[in-house]
Image (tube, rainbow, N blue to C red; front, side, top):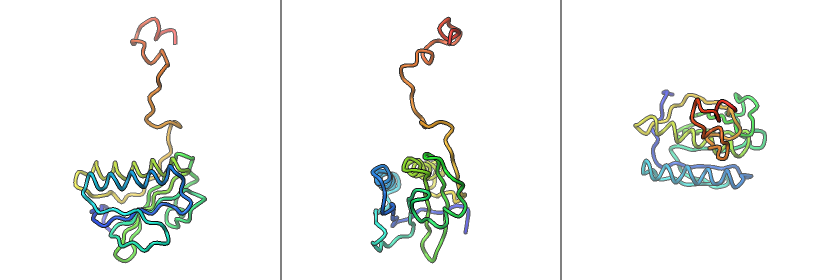
Length: 160
């Protein structure tokens, strides 16, 4: 398998049968972004449906959902941690997005979309990814902390 995958239609996104609202929203977000950015034909299917695909994106939570490939190599993830791994079977490539919790799934979907955008050519880097956040809130803006608004070197900043 090459180190990059050209993402082509049709794409099938499969959330877990026990997916939370956050995970279902992550699937819907991914579908909408793939359609808007790349003009791909994307379907969200459940496990019982047989959906034809050239790329399958399987979403799940560690310890709750059976995702064999991702489970084999993933360390224990925090609730916002994520693991992305790729496997090819027959003509279908599966991208496994495993979160330590539902928010980890959402961040995993975001990581896949970011990798596609960074490639510039609609290809996906197949290198496995394991991420743990440095902070519980990723990319959050902390409003209301006066020290964030104090000019550097001011008396307010020095007092903090």
